[in-house]
Amino acid sequence: MSDFTTGSVSANGLDFGYLAAGPADGPLALLLHGFPDSPHTWRHLMPGLAAAGYRAVAPFMRGYAPTSVPEDGTYQSGALAADAIALHDALGGGSDAVIVGHDWGAFATYGAANAAPDRWRRVVTMSVPPISVMTTAFFDYEQLKRSFYIFVFQTPLAEAALDRAFVEGLWRDWSPGDDRDRSPDVDHVMDCLAAPDNVAAAIGYYRAMLDPSRLVERFAAEQEATTRVGELPVLYLHGADDGCLGADVVAPGGDLGAVEAALPPGSQAHLVPGAGHFLQLDRPEDVNTRILDWLA
Image 1 (cartoon, helix red, strand yellow):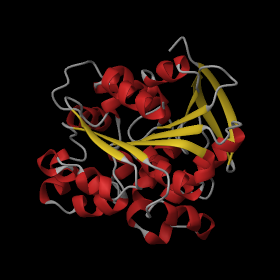
Image 2 (image 1 turned 180 degrees about the vertical axis):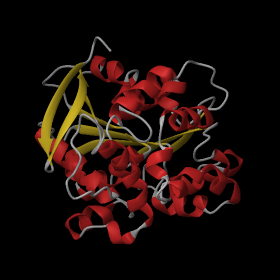
Image 3 (image 1 turned 90 degrees about the horizontal axis):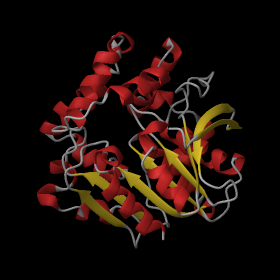
Image 4 (image 1 turned 90 degrees about the vertical axis):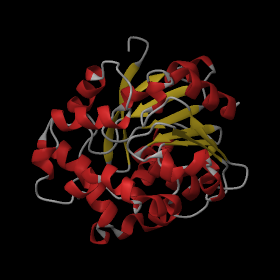
């Protein structure tokens, strides 16, 4: 990571740490990570964006150290979208900015693009389709088994369960068939979850997902924006071997037609062969090419 700089910025009432690459005066490319992950997941895409002239910035999401933990414990998707919009402003983004989100970062990206379309020129999401497709896929029996962790996170056992062995297991299961050493990525995750408050934050995303009582009115507009079809076309990428959200339910028979139908006109959806859930790490050259072509 020697070609990356680190920094921090205040946005939406939080102090965000981030990694950055590329010219300071380039168009902003905001890269949002998911769970259990960190901004280091973008280490292959950021140099490609920098070479294309973008200022690529990958923040640590709310509650992931060194980003601060929100005092009110708010982790709903609308708050994540509001974070992205506020980061755009705090980082000096213009209407030529682009936004890329993976996993929980995809939820944030849908909301930010729909709530503030004037701030983004291009939109990319990965591994989590629009909520209408997610809702249908979630109740498939095989998918319910894959999603066991979501239900664990609703219980008082969650904080004790979310340790290094648990994270290692998710990385192994979510990118099956990959024999590469994932310990450096797990190291980065555990650094982000270094304190009990950080662990509670990561779990809080999932508790807010299934508990309407955790939704706050302050982010109602952004929350609504995460669930509707927006106006900006989206490039959606999904790993063909994703062990978290199976391609068998998102793209039955290899067909992503349901995903494209749930996205704005002009959108594209593609399966990435040989890639699991962390497709930007599993097949970086393929993913980089698809994203850079879309941005161009």
